[in-house]
Figure 1: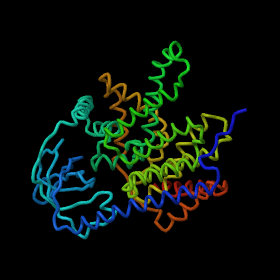
Figure 2: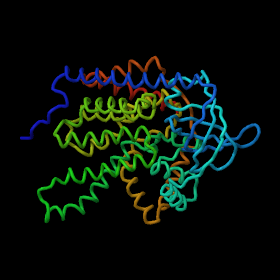
Figure 3: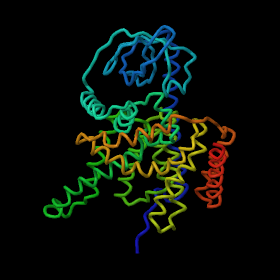
Length: 423
């Protein structure tokens, strides 16, 4: 008889105390940031140093120019338009002009600002990333394929045109590095290390726990990777969940619980309060919540094959009304998104292995045809903000009510039918 794993909290009182304490801590962190914001926008001008994260070529009335995405030494993310030159691996000294028009949410997430570049210094601190980027690019000829692989490996931002194709296909969640990518990587790395570790353990230290030893190495490797690619919010959330999941499994706590997800979210916001305005983080959390919700009501299903099919379809349906609050791109080809999500689980590690041996272009023809499907799309926005709150409340009530969960699935299914049938 299998022993039942203890919950994270003994009762709702303990959970409530934890939530209240975390909310107070988060509120204090936000208040400090707001004080810094008020001080920032009160300055007539501001000198700082910034690192160029990305540069976007633009066409203007007077010719081409660059829009730079910068990360300042104060931790701000800002966008600055400047002359058309290469700023790759550049560190800048800039003069910027804050205004009252910059909102607090923009201050936390990123904002456009007027300013001048006073000094440019090029560094080689990203030599490894540059080498990897060139290695990936040289194995492909089509620009879309280059963008695709750079995004799923190195979290490189997508161009507006390719981002539109990805949205039309309904695979934006596969491109943006998140929990799916980390879970695949962690499984592959764990399996490889286990093949090396197991013979040594059997002969020299059978008393060691392979899960603890290999798991720690995997977490360190994935932590380095998360930092290396720039710590995207969805990836930070995923990594935090992996770390806490590893600890919870060692201690013996229940892992697949909504309390566990709540703990992760509150700890993340307490550590990184700016993430509170990160749309990618909230979409990532909503996706994980959908997984937990589906798992909660399908545990009685014994067929693993049926579960493999149910999860991507269920997640897609539950997330569809939420994504159409922000992204109005709609196309019949999006109906293939669950199947592509399932395929991606195998594609991701295989494509990595092919790139390592120099055969990265082996699947380019198939990918080119796939992305061509995203060239045409129609646009609609059926779900308004007035419907968002009831849908969200229904989703939360579904944690305790099976009937609410069935209603939630019915609503999302009807929404999908209304959305796609006219197309």
